[in-house]
Length: 266
Image 1 (cartoon, rainbow, N blue to C red):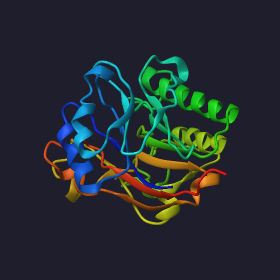
Image 2 (spheres, rainbow, N blue to C red; image 1 turned 30 degrees about the vertical axis):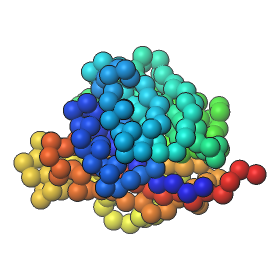
Image 3 (cartoon, rainbow, N blue to C red; image 1 turned 45 degrees about the horizontal axis):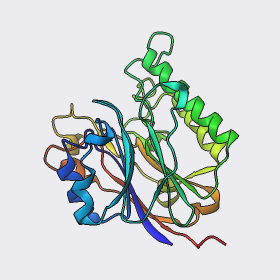
């Protein structure tokens, strides 16, 4: 079974449904994981994508915040959604493919501005969320699984525009990077993007605050596609569609892609 998967923090699906339709029409991923949909499920414009072939979907939503959805041209079954750390927020949904592969779509809390869990409850929630995700993966270690989404952490020095300048900035602090590494190890997960593109600066997010985001290029790689070791070797063709950051009224994130060529279940 072969398929292309993309992940994109869309920053309001209702506001940017046209951009999602453009991506689906021009790039045609088989599966698209969306984060920050910002609406209850019943108000998400999922039917807008049926004419493009994306008639299958699973989602978790809430009014105005968070929210995750998986759109697919392939048949999928809802494989649940977990409330890691008991935050009461729509940040995870999973879908099972006919091959038995489970795709987990995650939106990790951003963590606010101050990297101090004692002074900043949002940062404490982020660390708690990552710890709960780690513990779940260790307890129910997955196989034939893909974990994709906005993890809100740029783990490597070349995943940010200036490693030293961002060591005390939320999304690249040593504490977050270490916690994310624990998550990855607990699940036996491989960073598909960096397995394919091991060297060089690589970004998927650029702040709206930059007057010219492309020229200044002060980006971070916050969006990830990981896979369990048993199928990671089937992942290839990784890329980030930087051009989407320059579309009209864009998300501040760009879509991340990977291709998987998987053998059928025994």
